[in-house]
Each structure stands twice: as C-alpha cells, then as structure tokens.
Image (cartoon, helix red, strand yellow):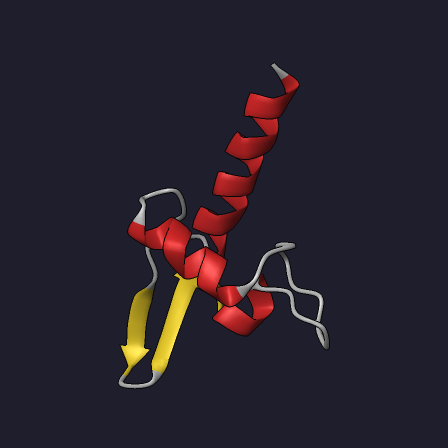
Length: 72
C-alpha cells in the first residue's frame, strides 16, 4: 500500500508578481483573477472564510499545456 501524496496548495501571493515579490507567474493578482473569471486559469477553492488556494498540480499542468502550445 502506497502513502498518499500530500496535497500542495498555492495562494495568490505565491502565484502573482509585484514590485516587492516575484511569484510563479509574471502577472499581477488582478490578472490571475481575470483569467479565472474568463476560464483561462484553473479555478481556486476555499479552505476557509479568508483562505483561497489553487491546487499546485493543476497550476503546473496549466503551465505545461501553455508551454506545449507555444512549442508547436
């Protein structure tokens, strides 16, 4: 029996970039939220009243798909 892989989550500050911090993506938080509304970025989910997160696997899969589209 294998041990389950722990769930990894990303918060908006880990994804977005601003003047003080370089995130995973070279875009601002409002851009990420716009992409979510437009269906261009994975949907987040709530862990609590004030905690919104993205599944790290989904985000990395999205990045991989984006890279594959560019290499075609």
